Length: 141
Image (cartoon, rainbow, N blue to C red; front, side):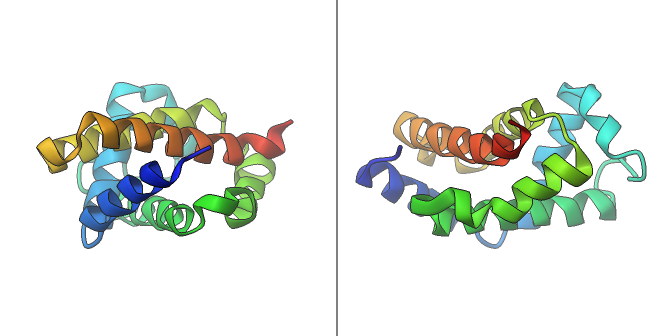
């Protein structure tokens, strides 16, 4: 999956996310809802307006799950098992949405990190988020 250098790049980039989880998570969700409006169907009970408390809270939860994944890159299946169960069996979210949100989060990171979100960091994060998306979709099979 990820080599040692990629893991280091991910961990270093994640340090820049710390302290911004709620804001960046909300920004990624808002971006997803605008760019991919079909994703709104999973949030009929949310106030989907800019900076809503529900989006901010959920964005923080999403980034908390990603932080858990960053800390458990060598065993993503175990680290994300309960989250995978929740999305597959209870929420029944289309697994494509994990990839869409991953893309939106990468855009948010690029915007905020600028030159620090180098092509090497981008590639490492892309591989990492693909792995996270794959694990979250495992229970759908």
